[in-house]
Image (tube, rainbow, N blue to C red; front, side, top):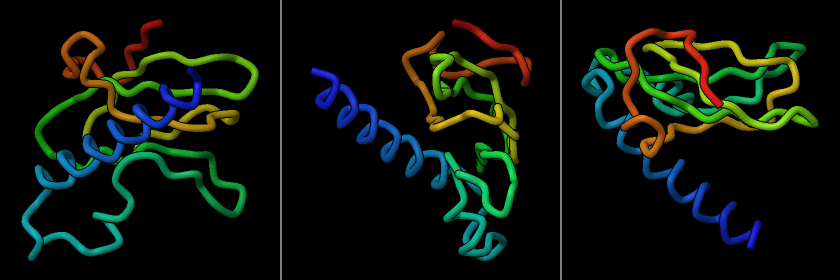
Length: 109
């Protein structure tokens, strides 16, 4: 059961990432690096993990998983949102409160 849920979550994250990237700035204005960074990013060289929301005109709910502390939802706006030091994943959650939110930084269960 957990593996099926993980596969569904990964498929949903891939679809959401594709949708978010399709709403980003036109290809002439975006660099390939920017498009590739949309969504969850582990961080490197001591940098905290972050979520890159590539749309420019919406705030969305993401679900963040953390090692040993469970998961929660967080409202993020366009651009980079640095996540908890123990974050192990994050993805757009269209099922949580309709997927859109008003105030970046808000959290929910």
